[in-house]
Length: 167
Image (cartoon, rainbow, N blue to C red; front, side, top):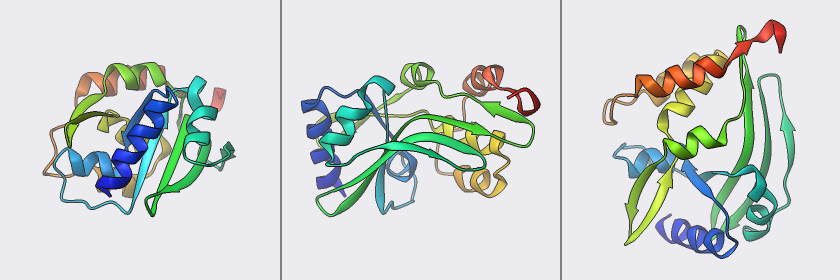
C-alpha cells in the first residue's frame, strides 16, 4: 500500500494535481487501526482530467439516490485508486454541496516516508454520512483511536447545507 501511495503522490505531483487523501488510508495514517484495501483521493475540480490521466483512467459523473460526483478508478502497484471530485450528498432532510476549498483549508498534513501527504478533514466523511442519513457509515467513522471531530468544521459545512425539499 505504501508503494502505491508514494507512486500516486509522484504521478499526481508530476501532473500538477491538487489532491487530498481520504477514506481508510487517511484514517490509517492518522492512527486508526483500520487497514485499507484501496486508496481514495479527492482532487480539485479543475484538476480532475489530469488526475484521471495520471492513474490511467477516464472519469465520468456518477449519481445515485444520495450522492453525485465525478469519479475515476485505476490501479497503481496493484492497488485500486479511486478518485473523485465535486461530491455532493442529498439526504432525507438536507443537501450538502461539494466544497473543495473548505476541505483544502482544513486538510491535515501527514508525514509519509519523508513526504507530506495532505489528508482531507476526517469530519467531511462524518458530515456526508450525517446529511445522507447513513448512520452505519457515521458509526463506522467514529473511531476511538482518532482525534475528536472539530465542531467548527461541522458548523461550517452544515451552514452550507440546504433543505432537500428545495434542492
